[in-house]
Amino acid sequence: MDGLKALRILGWIVVPYVMIFVSWKGLKGAGKTFGIIWAVIGALIVIGNLNKDDSISTKTASAPVVADQKNEVKAETKKEEPKASPKATPAPTPVELSKEGVSSDVKITVISTETKAEIGDNQILKAKAQGVFKVIELTVANNQKDAIILDSNSFKLIDDQNREFSSSTEAEHVAFGPDKTILLKKLNPGLSITGLLAFDVPKDAKGFYLQAQGGMLGKKIKLKVE
Image (cartoon, rainbow, N blue to C red):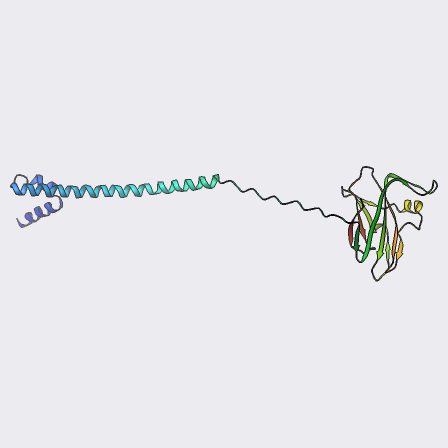
């Protein structure tokens, strides 16, 4: 009997909403009122716990969905970000050439440039160009400590297509004579010489500059001719 009584007490503590129906006939007026109140309180506690469990499970289940949505938003944002256009590299500023320069302590100065179909001072000693002659007058001053010799490799005329033209040595000697040419002459230290060079070039060639060097081993420099 004591065990049965203990079970009944435990039932009223744990499941009063069940015990109220089981013990209803045996309860008196005050007992019924107290039993109803206690059963209602127990039922509310159980319902509250059930709702709490459902809320927790719902949050747990929705957490991965929210995380996935955030990842999708980040991916879309990253995908839609416009790529920064690469900065354009500024074009190099062209260097303005001078008619005067120094190559390995040899000063070279362009005095004038003329375009001629033929060169020579008289009808007998004349040279006719296959295209046209670019006749360049220049001065060379040797400031080295040794003598130098200027040859056809010391001067090249180059156009805007990067074509390289050598001087017409034979035409120069025929038309100008030995006194007006500067090639194949020995130039001692401290001295200077002024003479003419003739380059036979195509008639439509343009954009020339003179590549010069002070002697056979001199540094190459660029000089303005037009």
